[in-house]
Amino acid sequence: MNFLEEIFTRLEAAQDLPVLQELRDRGPAIATGGQLLQSVSKARAVLARKGLKKGDRCGLLAHNCIDWVAADLAIMAEGLIVVPLYARQAPAELVAMMRDCSPALICCGEATLRDAVKQNWADAPPQVLFEELFAGAESAQAARPQHLTDSDQVTIIYTSGTSGEAKGVVLNVGNISHMLGCTSERLDLLMDSKSGQDRVFHYLPFCFAGSWIMLLTCLRRRNLMTLNTDLTKVSNEMRAAAPDYFLNVPALLERMRKAVDEQLWKTGGFPLSLYTRAKATWMRRQEGRKTFSDSVWLALAEAIIFPTIRKKMIGSNLKALICGSAPLMMETQLYFMMLGIPVLQVYGLTETTAICTMDDPDHVEPGRVGPAISGIEMNLSENDEIIVRGPSVFPGYWNRPQETSQALRNGWFHTGDQGEVDAAGNWSIIGRIKNLIVLGSGHNVAPEPIEDELLQALSGAQQVVLVGNGRGYLSAIVTGSITRQQVQAALDAMNPHLPHYKQVRAFSIHGEAFSIENGLLTANGKLKRDLIAARLKSEIEDMYEVKQAS
Image (tube, rainbow, N blue to C red):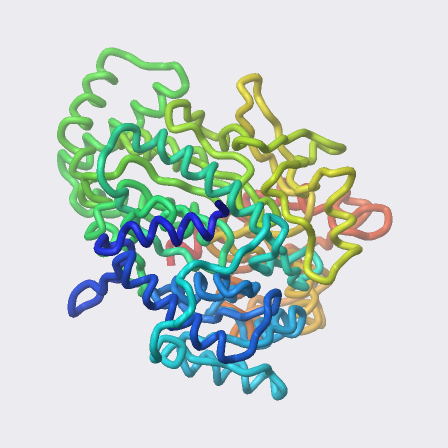
């Protein structure tokens, strides 16, 4: 039984069990297993009438919602290839992806998204809104999905490359079936002998591979997943959902940590004093230095302060936070551990069906991302590049044989990441061989196109270098004879035309140009990005400190 058949079987057995909910002002919107399958059946009837055939691509452009889940399942159940698209992406970029995969149909969550496609693509394929997709009667055909083999393609997920041009990562039935077995196995360890449904909170867009795998895992496990549909309400909805665990990006965890610090600074008095002493004690303990008085302060905080912080931050049910998509600062991981909240790290790429490694809940080592998942081999190649092979490694990029052959060599997928592994098999990620910037939100950004555009707008500038790995936003280092007013004016003109995560929010002017002589350019004139980041570390830190303080 493949993953899709398994999900349908388990939803059928959960006819009256809530599996999805959206928290709305007028009360939660809930879908039981039976109701979700009814919506899937309605959507399949519409898709069947469109005359689509097995293997046709179908775009899915919508914000997270229960209908997104039903549309996704319906497309796959009809034997079509679902192409999930980021609803906040610039329309021109979305159209470029869709032109690449030539969808036979585009399912849009709302009219504004449909209209944006039409405005940027005159000869776009037919579009159907969710209101039409779910308005009719249920399909007369059997509720079971079409038969699919392990090699059948089910999705194309677009990911940015160093060239800035998005590539479609093809995933097949076998990839996903293997991955869901691995994620469920690890969650079984986390939940131990707990009976009943897992309660899961979810705010990350389903069009991202890791987010989608969490969704499918929850459906397979018949969890209750609470969907956030308004990012301004994440904090309140997180507490209301009272989750056992949920998937995160580092940016949110770091904001949560800073919010606690700010609140206690405002409170002052004994709570602040105790909290400050306990944090210092905790860090000394991690370094192997502690005294009797340290133990007293930490014990007091664990009895008085930390339980209150945990309850106000996330609720009382939390077993662990799961974090992936970008590097997590060890300081942040240790902070949550101090509060009694384990942070389980995950490492992977879209090409590996989102995951290569996952922390073992019983053996978490701060700063590392855990051991390889079942069935996956990981090794180090030239320059300590992580290479991977196994049943969850993708078969190739859509219509890109050259890029596929470069990434998949002798049966191994070359990740472009540098890593190391300890004797226990726990991996750590050192850095990226490629220039791709991975923001703390998990968005991948190719720096070159943005650097080139900004450089062209600044006649007195010699170089522009973007930074932001693991950060909340992009910043730029500009060299040459240029004023802050000129750079700001260029950013004000450029940023509105970029997606939010590609906008440059801060900058620093570095008077001396990067050159071969000062060691910051290679012999053929290429930027030594890692060396620039190391030498200009204080300037980079200042950009983020100044922006956050303002």
